[in-house]
Length: 580
Image 1 (cartoon, rainbow, N blue to C red):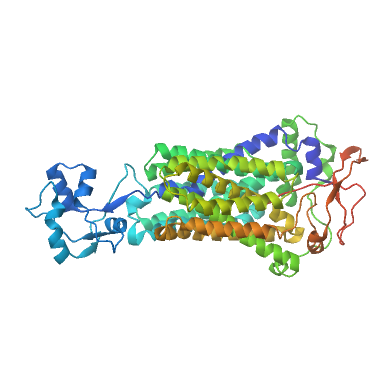
Image 2: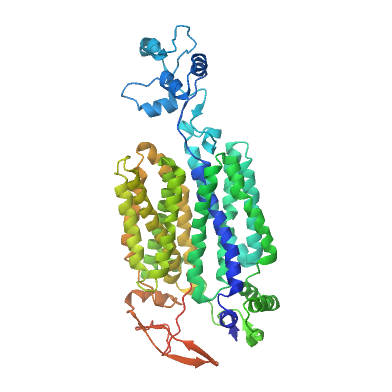
């Protein structure tokens, strides 16, 4: 009985058909970027101060410009109160309509009266924002006592990611990859538009949550669809490049935000492309693997014939005997207890959960920190996104040569050290801060993409999807609390979030060294094989080949120590699949 992987060897594992499909689906990863981190521009916090209609009227009478009005009318307290916080969130209850006030130095006329009689109040008349555009912050006044609402507006998106992942995967398995992809893209687009027209903050948060509920599902469905239609030898590279497309989206977001400084128009600009993806109904096929798993063999064969024709390959003779890769023996039922029942898997579970959490907090935290503290948010955002390309290149080059653990650990340590040093760099050395920020961003990107690869390699087959789901759920949990870490701690000390990132990243690097190296090893099938990973020796390369079913197959690697529950042939054909 032939499997779909056998057929792919004959019709092309990554031919023209798969390349065109992969190119189309990468656009889904591109447009997911603004949903994930677009709050940097949508929720931009400009300089602001209390609005005072009386002072503004005096400024118009005296002919002051904006800078003169601020210098002449913002009354700062003594050293017991932070002047910046005072000017932004507090004000003296001053009557600026007194006729005795002069245009040259009105504060001088008020000083003695203020010291004896004036009371301090909040900004009862709102705020004045020093920006030519608008953001969620400026429109809904998410500053001072309401500044936590900006954190919440991003956290609900990640909460949507977390809850959506619980049912989107089931729907994709139940109704198919293609319907799930198209429906989630349509719902993402609809709620994205509704966000742009949200009349109040409450509606804004509601629409962002609902958009997050389905948007990550569309991103994941796109990856699953392309991963299931390419050969095993190309799945790792496809997974890395799909995440590189996310980086392209970051660069595009910075450029679009630079030219569109109104948050509603920016939200529309990054949302409307999702409607174009509805055209994928005619050019994106259903996954043949899923069709085979649902016993829809005729539909699967039609798609396979299209792939063969596009790749200019003959239609294989094995189509009639084509089956899904299902184990016909006794199936093990996955259980959450299996993730903690045995020592090695329990160790893997807790370490991977922590690293997923750390990657989310540090990766998203560094992006949000740029938006909150940068002098030129567009330039710094663009440059820091650029360094994600070399991170992906390092992974492709090193994972099959050096291995997983050491590049992964180095990336985590670099992130921790760069964040720690950046926190103590003076503001005047902006170029050095940007350089170290890029290093930390590259390190955490490498870690994030590496854990997507390794997570699947540390669990046996029957609990692999469960292990990935449980561990990666900590990524969404980290995303929920990250805005509060960045924005609340920055109010205490602007660089305090970097200290937190340094500690998290360094500890992550230490824990990586406690994981086994999986380079050159087949995916484990049983719990016993996973428990033996630490004991396995290094792999050796066997330069041997033989004929199998009339085809010449190059044999690659075989572990020198055989796991107890599995026997290896003399020449073992090694393949690697990845999952995230």
